[in-house]
Image 1 (cartoon, one colour):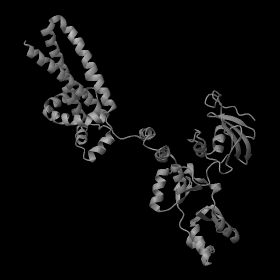
Image 2 (cartoon, helix red, strand yellow):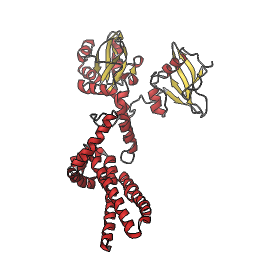
Image 3 (tube, rainbow, N blue to C red):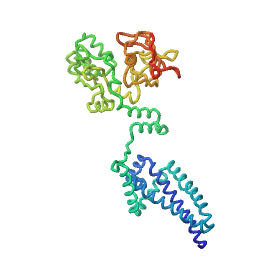
Image 4 (tube, helix red, strand yellow):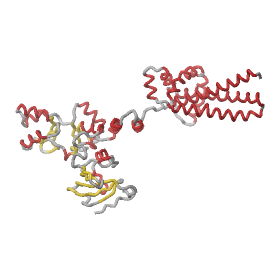
Length: 433
């Protein structure tokens, strides 16, 4: 061989190493690129993004052309390195050349380009798409043959080739994306987005105003008491019933009552004429569905009923919005006597308080899957009504029953247990009077 031929082989070897690096980086870049960002850029008219999106529609063909090109470059580089070794130092240099080429390919054609592509996929994916698209058209017969043989092997192994690749993001994955976007999305906005994603898991009976707390208009009550209730009510919408809540006949907007009072025509008949039909929803309705129901019906208040049709509580649009943006009404724990912090770090809590409200107000992780209220949680665990003075430990929280009323816990003291304290998860939480 002449010196020019040797120089040409060196140039060819360098070019093949660069080609191998290109294919290695292109593979990682196109496979790790953010599909939603890619789709957005393609929709905005970016040509490279459109080419990349088109290539990713058939990942088998894309991988086929990349692997054909990469393997051709590596094999050709190995052959040229062998020729150079024979030309310069004879057969003894072949093994040395193979070792050096392996090191060069591993560092400069594999690790470095793939690492760069993984860190900055956008920088490499779009330019690579300009090259790979026409290259796929040229090498299509070879790529088709390689894919056909590969697909045949997969069929022999029982792998279905008809199943489409899933690109949908699950709810948990979307939550993770929101949490990781702390630089782009303020924390308060993250919390609202995460709350929206949780709406489907929350039912109306988890956020409703319980039956015993419902304020309504009893048409059979003393008229003076009815007027006093209407004029002093802090609610804008009230259920209307006869005798008790099991006989609800409608709902009333207080603004209509004020108009009737101004006109001097307020009486039972005018109240009946001003109210609208009651709106009932099953207790298992998700907040997502109920939000859609409110929007469709143009209503803001619904009565929650169980499987027997008995009224369990009341839910308004405010309760659903508070699940998204946080409490903004007088129901906020700590503003009422439902929860009182104590100097020792514990809290005096009414038994009727929702566990969800405690978790949200104090950042706790009380279980809400089986019981909704503190009273229900205690009674469900003990399977009996505890006596005042009973203490127990549940899920890392020490609970002391201070007062009971009838068949329910009225007041309890609750505080997180010290780290290392035995909990009900490891021992059945001895309840001692």
